Amino acid sequence: MAVAKLHVKKDDTVMILAGKDKGKTGKVLRVLPEKQRVLVENLNMIKRHTRPTQTNNEGGIIEKEAPVAISNVQLVCSSCNKAARTGQRVLDDGKKVRYCKKCNEIVDK
Image (cartoon, rainbow, N blue to C red; front, top):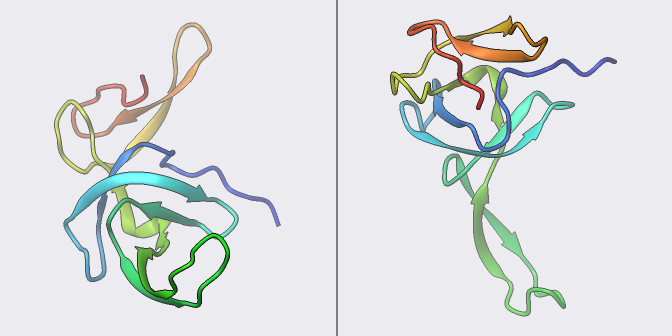
């Protein structure tokens, strides 16, 4: 199965569109293209019961981020500060960049 190119990248700011954290924004920590999911900082938190190991001497209940489906996040445009759909555009020098469909500004640096 081919892995599709996704509309968000690591360190992007995204807004959650569905679920218990709907409307909240956060930074993308990790993109999992093979599962079509992303990890967003301090959002979709779950409690994981862990036993003591050599790296973590104290076991107990650890809170960590769970992956969110890529279809449930939308990129927040840095220029208009709104969650917006993105498109792709090829610049004159041949570089492919993402742009905000609301304000027509380039999202990639």
